Image 1: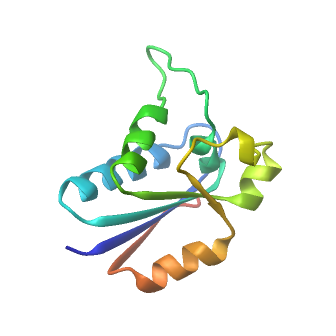
Image 2 (image 1 turned 120 degrees about the vertical axis):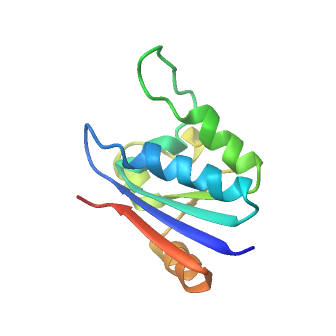
Length: 119
């Protein structure tokens, strides 16, 4: 199996890029691929612990935590997270927080790279 690196560059309200990127990562892990997922911009909100689920509103905390527990490397941009008020103590355990050089190194070592979002 190969390694897939997903860069998720989520925009503001109304973006479905996070949902799509997480579903893609899940499917790749189920097929046995290694997955590195980079969360940038507003996508860093996935790293925040204590999210609340609502009946008709997308909440990905359980799904993304399951991905991490299943072996995916999910890493949030440290600068993006800090600028949005998500500090080290606010992040779900096992999530990474690194600078963009981590993402670039992951891209370099991946078999396939997908940049999702950035609209």
